[in-house]
Length: 194
Length: 194
DNA sequence: ATGCATCGATGCATAATGTGCAACTTGGCC
DNA sequence: GGCCAAGTTGCACATTATGCATCGATGCAT
Picture 1: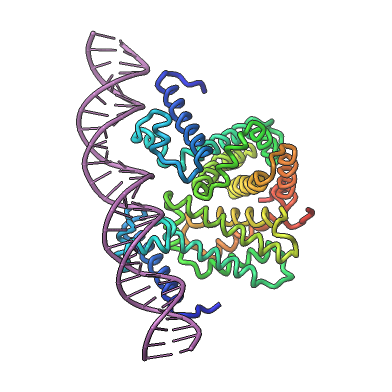
Picture 2: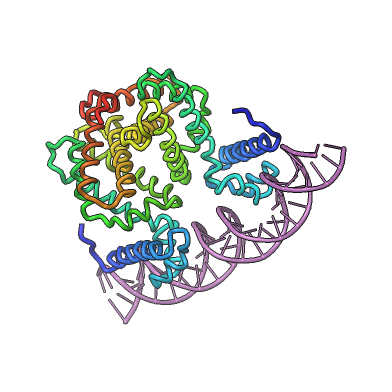
């Protein structure tokens, strides 16, 4: 797990620095007005090198979201094996969001130009989550159930997150709404209690 | 509903011609190797005019799925009012997919570079579907339930579609898998029958 | 430590993407 | 016909993105 050599540590650091610089500039000037040249200059890195780390400005900006998604999956895998899938997901979400930078997240989620890349991030993590779910259930990752479960649960939590970010930050409310939606998925959309 | 003047008819025609040309060239040379210049030339339209219709090459290529998504929502709204939401969605999907161009769809879905834009299309249609669901249920479009229902159902059908496109085209199988997934959402992910 | 092999950083060239702007053309309407 | 609105086009320009060659830093075996 630990990074071994100086080389890899530097790479990680450079990547993080570029991501942070991108977010910092976006917060200051607005997502639309940040250029790769600015990000590279802020990090004191050649523009060409930026593109060795990220294939676009958008990818750098949603890297924070990608990291959170990875953390979510790691948390999910760390949950006790006996726990039901949706309960484990609920707890993993709560755990990750507790340490999330709401300001940056709101910036990313609200920027229309970042929507495609952000959704692409979720979609790629969807596969990893499906595998984790399959592992937990002792099923094949090629089964339909883990794939649908992963995709719909991630989507449901995305919807909750987007709505929550439109309100003043209140982590108790987020927890509550997450539980509500997970409950909805667990019990079935047909019996619409809420 | 009908297009009134020659102006609007021409605009519609130009848009369709650009979209078709983009897909035709993508089928012939591969998505990655098509340029806006080629698409414009194929349609005998100035490059600048292309950007009056689509903000990117990717947007033109996924315009076909955007049209299908619009058709899906129209079908959903046309279903009998008494029908349950998920049943109406299932039927709407079957109806739209029956007339779908599988070859083009497979091309679009399999192209990694089109993933972000394609997902963005689904996300924008998600809102429209949520409104349609809210209308059907006599609820507010701001409620959580219609939003989650629209988002998760669309996502589930995306997963089914993506998996189905990896197999030889068999519309009976698509119908079957759609029913299975809709049933899963309706009954709840917790009781995992399949 | 020293030399070597590998990997990353960088500059350069170049293709391609997008957008603002102004001139020109066409369609709709009286 | 003739006017006004809307669409098309060319041009200039900033930006994005990638291939390629080179240089320097790192890691490793001896």
